[in-house]
Image (cartoon, rainbow, N blue to C red):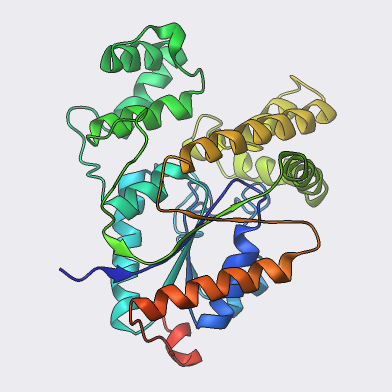
Length: 321
């Protein structure tokens, strides 16, 4: 079976994935698929750093604002939706760009993981977390991996994803050696020096507060979204819930957002380094144009090698997939 073409951009949060995806989409007449677990939710714009409404009008974006805040979303749903969009784009002669930092979503899509649960599905693990908290997840994961609870991460989201990987038949601790991808095309990884990345993360968090992250969370609560909803587990939202409840001052909320995002970026890099087919590019302050051109030349070479012909009209690109 012919592998459909797909350009993929991964990297830690605040590394420049959105800007690069927009640049490539303009040059290639492409559309953009979000590979982010929280950008799917309507009304969650500031804390998820979505592309602006103007950018999304210029370049069609998909898998953004496609779910209500109270809905459950999963890697399996993402895989199904993204696969349908990729097939539709191919029929229209348009190449899609997948850009995102949710490792399980991206890797599961590229490598065709089977997300049909072998016993427990994502909703069951969520219920387990609701009933027994992190301890329940740790006990389940320790049993499946045959390790001590003390050897496991304490992040519930990470434990849930590891459980999903195990149910999908994958080893969450094993580095990928020669994974067979079901889509063909360049997989670009963005990275930058730790100090520079952390500065960008800290500044982004400050800007989110200034843009009204607290008000965004209050609006979601006013709409009836439960503080325990899946969408509220994202970094930024959890901390703002603590601020709104009066548990911590806003200054502490900002500090926690910055710290937790830095830790998350480190986990993202750990995940993506297990994907050996990624071609890494270093982002440097003040050298964005050089990076964009370097990536574009690489992508163009790969598409030529694949004999992919892409020259859709603007009308074709703007048509809904």
